[in-house]
Amino acid sequence: MAAIDPAEKRRLFERLSSVREIVFGVQDGVLTTAGVLCGLSGAVSQHSQVALAALASTAAGALSMAAGAYLGTRAEAEVLSAELELVRVEAAAKPYTVQEGLLDELCKEGLSREGAYRIVRLLSTSPKALASTAEAKMFGLGAATLGRPALDGIVMGIAFLVGAVVPLLPYMLIPAPRYDLGGALAATALTLFGVGYFEGWLAHRDDRWRSGIRFLAIAMGAAAAGYLIGLAISPLGATAG
Image 1 (cartoon, rainbow, N blue to C red):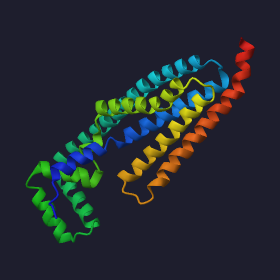
Image 2 (image 1 turned 120 degrees about the vertical axis):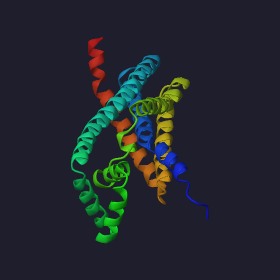
Image 3 (image 1 turned 135 degrees about the vertical axis):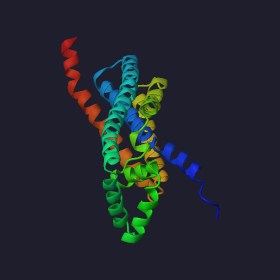
Image 4 (image 1 turned 90 degrees about the horizontal axis):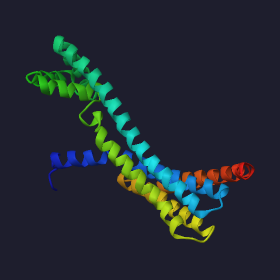
């Protein structure tokens, strides 16, 4: 049996930390664009106007999602960093509080008091090792917790674009009425099912198809609601004209 390479596992976990942005971005891109297409198809008769509106929505949505992910991750990182700095200052002034807290956490994880004491005593020979271990065990904080704002924003924006293109391409390439929207919905359904199945695969689930069905149900529900809303407001457009 091959030995576990810590560096390789660390890189793997860093890559997997972007799964949230990828899944959320693709899902939101697919659902938003499919909803726009369904809603406008029920209210606007011209195919080109619906496609242009969906393109504009895609561009605005991608920029908004990217900026939101960046700002959200950065705000979270700044708040956590500030709180962590306060903890480090207090720990430097009163190191025994960190030692006692870490000792209690290790005991809660099943170590004997004596065994936990030996570990804390050994870690205390290196202030940096003691601090990083205490932050992880006592506060659940680590380097990955603080996030990467720029990377999160880029991944979210690209994922949204990829998801938005899925229903948009069939709609633009199929000129026949109804078939264009049908093609967009079919592509949406397959993509959402695929994203859900992929998420289940990453989580090593046996019933991966359940994740796909869940994504599919949400997509169809949003599309149907958007289409009904478009039909409901279509008389307003006729009155304004």
